[in-house]
Length: 245
Image (cartoon, rainbow, N blue to C red; front, side, top):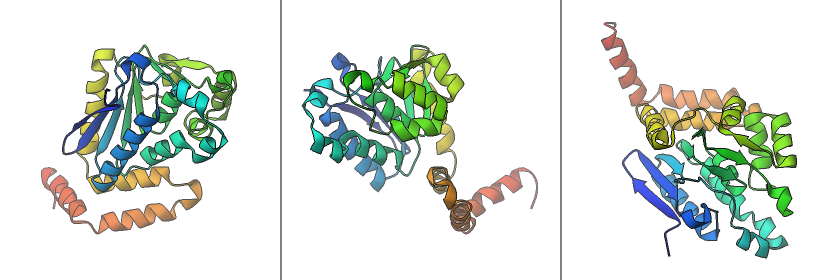
C-alpha cells in the first residue's frame, strides 16, 4: 500500500504530495489521517507547507468512502476538521494545483494561504450532483476568496473554473507551466523564508483574524515584534546598507 502523502522535509519548509495517482488523488480517510499527522508536526515545529499532487491535485473525496458515511460522520466533519487545522498552521501554506482540484480537493486548496496553478487546472465543487453539499470549507472559504456571486454560482451549479477563470477571480495568484509549477511554489516559499519567521507568523494571524478583531490584534502583534531582537537586527542592517545610522 502506498503512503497517502509523500513528504520532503527541509529546515524551513515541508513539501507534501498527495499520493493516490490511480485514484486521481481522491481524498480518503488515510489521507486525512496523514494530513492530521503532518499538521501535528508543523504545529510543533512551524515551517512553510507546500501541498501538491502531481498530474492532478485531487479530483475529490473518495466516493466509495463517502457513500458509506452517515449522519454521525457528517457531524464529525472528518474532512472539514483536517482542513481547518491546515488553514490554522502557524506558517503559510502554498497549494500548487495541476489538473483536477474538485470537491474535497478544491476545499483542501481553499484552506491554503496561497494557490498557484497550471493551464490544465480545473477547480470547483460538484457535490450537489452527488447528493451532498460542499461541507469541508467551500461554503465559507470560497465566498471569502472569490466573493458571494461567483461562489454561489459555483456551489449551486457545480461550475468548474478553468485556470484563466480562477486567475481572474483571484482563486489562484499565478499560472505556470506544469514543469515549472513546483519550482514556482518553492520560489514563493523562498521569499517567505527570507523574512523574519515571527513576522510571517504574526502576519498570517492578522490575515486570518475576523474583521472585528482589527485593529486591536494588529497592535498586539506589532507590539511583540517591536520588542524583538530580530526587528532591531534587520532594521539596523537595512540602515547600514543605506549608509544611515
